[in-house]
Amino acid sequence: MARAASGTEAGTGARAEDGAAVAGWARVAAAGRTAGELAGAAEREAAAWLAPPAPVRLADVVPAPERVEPDPGADYLLPTDAVIRVSADPDALAVGEQLAALLRPATGYPLPVTDTAGPTPTGGIALHLTDDADLGAEGYRLDVSADGVRIGARTAAGLWHGVQTLRQLFPPSIESATPVGARWALPGGSILDRPRYPHRGAMLDVARHFFTVADVLRVIDHLARYKLNRLHLHLTDDQGWRIAIDSWPRLATVGAASEVGGGPGGYYTRADYRRIVAYAAARHVTVVPEIDLPGHTNAALVAYPELAPDRTAPPPYTGTEVGFSYVDPASERTYDFVADVLGELAALTGGQWLHIGGDEAFKVPADVYARFVERTQRIVAGLGKTVVGWHQIAPAAHTDGRVLQWWGTSGDDPVTADAVRRGASVILSPGNHAYLDMKYAPDTPIGHDWAGLIDVRRAYDWDPATHLTGVPTDAVLGVEAPLWTESVTTLAEIEFMLLPRLPAIAELGWSPRSTHDWDSFRRRLAGHGPRWTAAGIAFHHAPEVPWSTPPSLPAPRPAPPDHSATGSAQA
Ligand code: TNX
Image 1: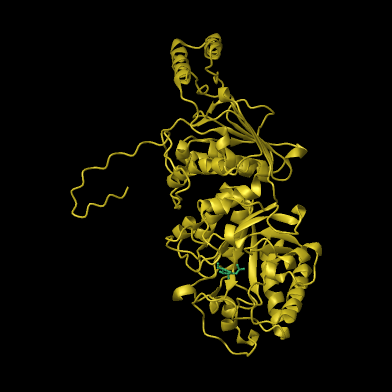
Image 2 (image 1 turned 45 degrees about the vertical axis):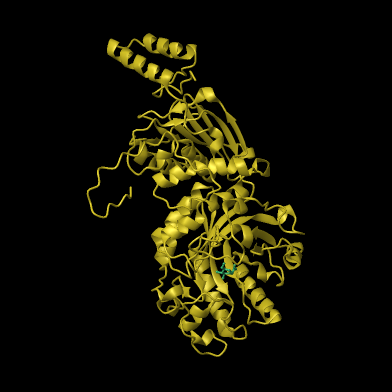
């Protein structure tokens, strides 16, 4: 195909279509340059003339954007001296710096960030705050032309999501941590994009197995890539208490020292937790902390036997059963504990939500349970936060804004539907579609199967808007993919369970239903394998995704002759 991508430097970026390259040449000649400069410019024009199109298509983005209008004549080649120009606003400038930090390692370009953004692209990448009401709180518009890239949004969050799209439009080797000699070409055209739902989340269980701050930060990076905006941290369970609480210090010093299988456990100090919250906030992700109550509390009872119904410390628990433990709902001390813990957590947490768990309190009678939940809901409201709970809290009385996280496996749940009629909103985490601790296939080495096997298609093929009978569309806040970690022990295992299913849930949360198409999704998803590989991210090579190595990746070098006895062939 006789089509070239673009000019090779900002300012000389003539499109090499038919007469366009000649026109570019004429512009250069007219500028009164030396013979050497003219020869150099001619060489670049010739290169542009012969250049292949950008290897990624504008429509290849995950989650699928609302509207994509490719312009194959308008590919853009990032020049070595590109500048990132940003509206003069601290949050927008922070996004500009983050974009530069994403692009510098692989390109090796300096990519300076300045705050002199003009209204039209004149080379390089421009990030603009605009007052375009259509874009909403998180939407953006992205335009790639032969002259440069422009992202417009009403908020820094919108610019951030636009940057995630832009990142996916570069060749996969943009994910490399070291310079790669690639052509950094972007496909021309425009994208207009807005999320379908305000809540797009993932949950990480750091209680069954403890994960370091560094692991959590990396998970936040994975969320942000796919435009998820909530990280729900399951901070406490029978096997361990993972957050330091000043007023109840033994929760951490005693309650954290165990995990499934008997490992050492661990906990986040207040400084650790603040670091997680700040790192997430800088990526436009809000942390939703969960203290699971009144059940799933064995670790708290080990630390403070006064909370146990029989005032006796149970042994630390390292198994995987559920439903046996609970704090005493008849003791006033329990409510001091709840108020102190939630009070400290509210002060540490920037976001609006506190998750109170509420699942599987099998030993607490239904009426006692409902009164406990109601009192805990009032404590949360008194802290100025919005309460979230697993859908088991549905029978309790309504309180302003309360949110139920539904994790059932059949779409028929009259108790949840009734709570919605009384005012609750719902986050959908159907166990048989969104539970990322389920195995992909019978031979998946880790994970559960109580909710069935969840391959990528099963994670993708459902509709949050119609999934729950009797729950109207406007009561659905969004989706969330929980990762329980009874069998997950390392970061690589977290990534193996998240990828490639997390992008499926992300697309359900972000993309308009009109874009929903399995064949399109799995083809777009396939392009992400090389990105994850370039970034050193583990993933499951799900057989239903047509993984490929795009031609833009450098061919692997032939291995040197192997003279060792064992002959490891690892790359
Ligand atoms: C159910 S889902 C649980 C968790 C387990 C999970 C394992 C929910 C609210 N409770 O305690 O870890 O199943 O899949």
